[in-house]
Length: 167
Image 1 (cartoon, one colour):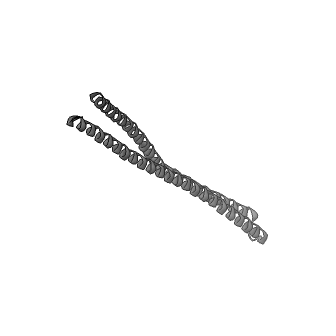
Image 2 (tube, rainbow, N blue to C red):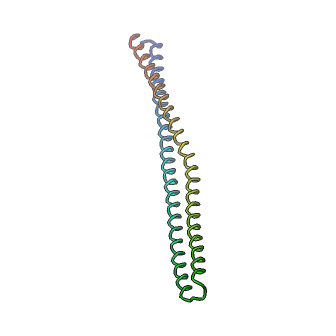
Image 3 (cartoon, rainbow, N blue to C red):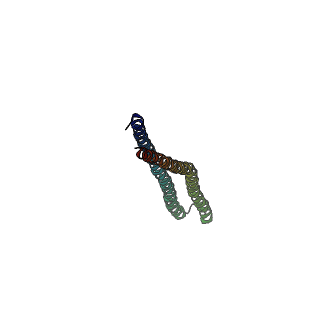
C-alpha cells in the first residue's frame, strides 16, 4: 500500500468521524429543541388550565355572593313587612329593585370573568401558534439533516468502495 492510498484511507476515516460527530451534534440540538418545545407545551397547558380554573372560581364566587345577598334581602324583606312601618307595595317594589341589582352585579362579575378568560386565552393561543411553528421548523430541520446525513453516508461508502477497488 503506497502513501497516497494510506492518505485516502485516513481521509475517509476522518470524513467518517466528522460525519458521526456532526450527526451527534445535530441530534443533540434536535433533542434540546424537542425538550424546549415539550416544556413550553406543558407550561402553556398549565397556563390555560389555570385561566379556566380562575374563571370558574370567579363565576362560582359571584353565584355564591348573589345567593348570600338574596338571603339577606329576603330576611330584610320579612323583617320590614313584619314591622309594617311602610306600605307592602313599596317594600316589595324596593325589594324587586334590590333583587335586580343583585342579579345584575352577579352577571357583571361573570361577564368580567368570561372576558378575562378570553383575553388570557388569546395570549395563550399566541404561545400555541409559536409552538406549532417551532415544531414545524424542527420537523423540517430533522428532514434536512436526515437527507444530508444520508448523502454523507453514501459519499463515505463510495469512497470506501473506491479504496477497496484501488487496493
